[in-house]
Image 1 (cartoon, rainbow, N blue to C red):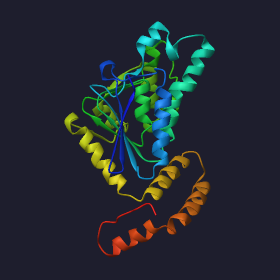
Image 2 (cartoon, rainbow, N blue to C red; image 1 turned 60 degrees about the vertical axis):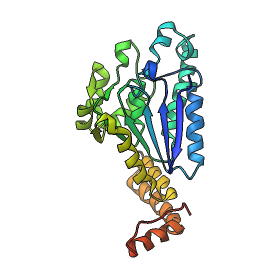
Image 3 (tube, one colour; image 1 turned 90 degrees about the vertical axis):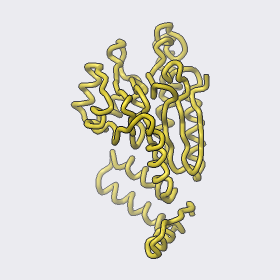
Image 4 (tube, one colour; image 1 turned 135 degrees about the vertical axis):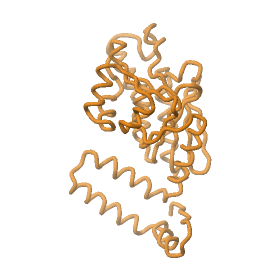
Length: 265
């Protein structure tokens, strides 16, 4: 079954992991290509200003395909070099595609997000969770390590000590704990999850598209550059924004006490 269901409306694209019968596992042939194609199309479309990632059925994603691991097939089969290449050319392609999105990404975590599924959620800029959501990085319980960059992603969100606790124990935490630890920004009733995510996405999508993408880039670059470097990048980017029609629209709307209508110009 194709992994992704893609829906776009009102400047927002929703990507739904669509293998509900098996809790939306990843790692099947073509998964990386599907994500790469979807994210490349989003980046090329200035009409898209925000993305929501969620899962169909009762899970966000249970992570890697356990059945394929057991049978040592697909991405998880072959020699050690072949498995390594399978990660690089398929699973890592999924992760790189999401990480490379130029527009803000919201993870609407509707149920368990385990292993690779947790790491997918952590690549989002914002996470909203259903009260039924659970989070875990249970790789060690399977005798493997986080093969998808999770040890780079998770500590940046919840800190080294809490990330280490999850990695080294394999514990799974509930949505309330995830909110307390800063893994998610809010927890909502499951029936209201997509409405909450859509409302947030709509608010983001009302922003000027060029400035929105540049703001995300500034936040991303700020993780690894010096303050002086961040100021220099901000100055150069800001100069471009001052010359846009959207900047003038923002000023006019403020002075005229009305909502701005940004057109990406």
